[in-house]
Image (cartoon, rainbow, N blue to C red):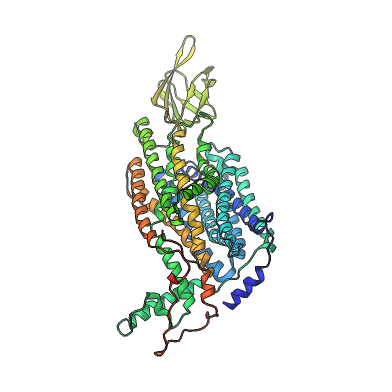
Length: 615
């Protein structure tokens, strides 16, 4: 502990502040670093499901499963990054080294998306390898950057630190908005394969490293505390063994971890108690993320079965970035409007109350998604229309002419043999097709097919008349008439829930963690996201439900979980981890606690620390 205090004392010198405020200049580099990392991450992930379906030719369920498996890996790996940071390299160097892994992953993923590189097997292998490297890079960085930013603030500047986490979260979504708006993403499947897009992703991933290193001289850097996770595991193991061996011989102790007092310092035991109490509180949280992360899978697939025509400026690209855009709007509204108004009503809105309210809002979002899904099913009543991707319209030609005909619709080529030959069913983008070229061996004709709309299935019968080539267009499956703008309410609910749940949880995880385990507890928070994606994997692969019933199931489960969480939160008592420094004045990291019959050492209870009200 003495070593830790000296190190922090050396690096907690008067840091440069932003414009006379209590915000260190160093956080600007951290926020920009996070913005660049999120820009590159969302640039790759925005159309990942569609990339699987159209480029790797996987079906809808497999694409959804792999998407959520990748998301899970991105949030399981933070534990590895946290252990490396707190035990070995420190947060600063961990971010740099894993950022390099992250950039390499993007390069490999981009090479796998180039059509000329190998066959489909090579594409799959390179894509999966790239995604694994990206997951290890971005996952390992996540807990370190957030905790490193919190470390820059002095102990007394808790309000500034709370607002930093809001700004930090805004930078995440600003990266998402800039990517989606700048690339004008309107579902071109090959957009993730374009060299230009991949170059943007790699460039920003590289800029992330440069910016973070540029602020090196301004950071407050706390050295690693040694192998924290190993010490924690050994302490827990010793407590369990000691309790088992002496449970009948010795008097009971107030907490089962107190059985480790014979070998381990009281401070370490108290820190583990603090972490355990928070981790138990995290148990219900994955259900929120099970709903939230379906924006990139189930909600995207729902959008592909809706009408994506421009109406009042609303289109697929806008809806895709709506969550990130609303985050940028909602954070200041909640911080400067909603929360102060609730305070004026004399309602004490604690962090755990905010998180419970966020869960309810997410459940409402899935109720809205259920209503939309039911209407989409009614619109697309046939089996093909309800189960296949309908982002494009499909077309085929029947040729009653005595000559073979080659038809060009936009960039797509159709061939219909003579005497009632039928062409292949080929998807074409929505649009007006006024000059469709039809070539025979002896002549060339132009026909006006008019509008080919989203999700429709057309059959065009070509006939030779005396005045030229005539056609009859039949709409076998009606076009999507439920507009994508109807998804806006569910995005509003899920984003409001995210503001109250995710940002609050991020700050809560930092504020309730002891100094030596802040990255570890941040990783624990992020792992709730991973388990949430596992829940989606299980339901998507095993439930076999209609989509609207699946949405309703998730909404009901989250309401039930929010009630359980509220009960658990009611009994949670907030603690101040910094009080450990005041309680344990002497360094006992390398000393064993000796017990004697004449003198008993009482463990300092968590309830002795300054606390706020419950829930």
